[in-house]
Length: 80
Image (cartoon, rainbow, N blue to C red; front, side, top):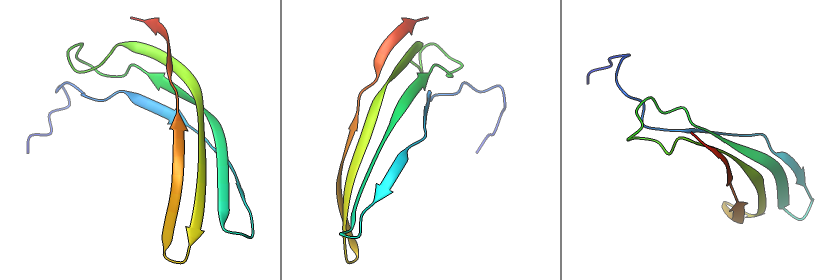
């Protein structure tokens, strides 16, 4: 595999830090802001947009299983 540092990067970066709370019943919830940063180096490989929005998660841990739902909404702020 060629690992050339000049090769185009195909992904954009999404940053989030989540505040979580765990209850004795095995339910965990969390919420945070999420930010979309246009970090691709080739305009064909990325959207070229800046965005932000909320994200929340609710999980239930039952033995070896984890069930849950993730809500993530990113609104475009600026198109470059």
